[in-house]
Image (cartoon, rainbow, N blue to C red):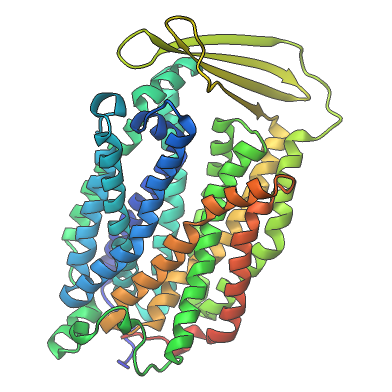
Length: 521
C-alpha cells in the first residue's frame, strides 16, 4: 500500500475539483428528479393518450431504464478511467449526460412524430443512465484522490450534497416555471402542461457548459499520475474480477464485496424512499395539493443539504462506520412513526369550517390539431375542515358529444399554515437520516479500494446499490401498497428491510475505524 499523501494539491485546485465534480452530480440528479416528477405529464406527451394508465406505465418503464443502465455505465466508464485516466472518463460522461438532458426538452411529441417520440426518449434515458453510472463514481474517485487524506470525507460529501441540491432545484424549477408563465394559476398550469415543462430541461445546458469548462481545466488525478509511470494500472484485470483482488489489507474479498454492497444498498434505498416515495406519499396517500407537497419537500431538504457536509467532515474525525450505521438505524426506528403521522395531520378532526364558499372553474382544451376531440376539465374549490379542498374532474369529449370511457377525477387538499409546518418538520426528520448515510458513503468506498481499480470498483458498487436496489423503491412501494391497501406504510417494508440487512452486514464487516485501513494511495 502506498504511503499516505497528506496534501494532494493546492487548496484552490482542490476547491476547483470539488466544484467540477459536484456540478456533474447536481446535473445528474436535477434531471433524475425532473423526469420523476414530470412522469405523468411526459406520459401524455410522448405516448398514446388513449390509454392513460398504459402511457404512464410505459413512462415509468422508460424512467427505469436509466437505473438498469447505471451499472453498465459504471463498468464502461470505470474501465476507461482506470486505463486512460479519471479526467477524460468523467468529462465524457458529463457531456453525454448533459446533452441527453437538454435533448429531452427538444423532442417532438407523439402527436407530431408518432412512435419515434417514445423511442427517442428511451434512447436518451439509456444514455443518461450510462453516463450517470460513470460520472458519479468518477467524480467520487477524482475528488477523493485529489483531496488530503484527512479531509477526504468532507470533500467527497460535496458530491452527495449536490445530489440533494439537485432535488431542491428541480422542484424549484418546476414551481417557478409554472408561476412565471402566467399570474392566473389555471392558465399557467395549462401553458406548463403544453410546452412550459420543457424549460427546466433546456436550462440544464447552462450548467453543462460551465461544468465542462471547469473540468477541462483540471489536471489528472494525483494517484493516477503516480501509477501511470509505475506501470501498475489495471490493464491486466478484467472487471468485475478486479473487484475481488487476491490480496487486500482490509478484509477477505467476499466480505469486502458484501460490506460495500451492503453500505450502498442501504444508502440507495433510503435516498429514493426519502425523496421519491415521500413525495408520492404526500400526493397520493395524504391527498395534499401538488404545489404544496413539492414546496414542503423543497423546504425540508434545504437545511438537510449542508448536514451532508457536516457528517462527511465528522467521518474524517471519528470514522465512517458509526455515522453510516447510525443513519440507517435512525431511519429504521423513526421512519415508520414519521410516515404514519403524515396522513393524520391534514385529517385532524375538531376543526371549524372556515367558509361555505365554493368556486367552480371549467376549462376546455383541444387535443391534437383538430377540434373533433376536446378535453374538459372542471375544478371545484371549497373550504372544509380548515382545508382548501380541490377536486378535478377531467373528461374527453368527441365531436358527437360522446364522452370517453376514461374520465379522470382527482382530489387534493391545501392545508393550513400550522399543519403545513408540521409536515415540513416530519420531512426534515426523514431528510436527517438521509444526510447521515450520504455524508460518509463516498469516502468509505474510496478508502476501501486501491487506486489501480478504484474507478471501476467504486462506481460498480455504488451503482448496484443505488441504481438497482434504490431504483426498485418506487415500483415495489406501489406493489406493496396495492397488495395491502389497508396499510398506508406498506411501501416502507422493502426499503427498511434492506436497510436492516445492511445495518447487520455493516456492523459485522466494516472496520470500526475505516480510515485506519484506508487505501490512501
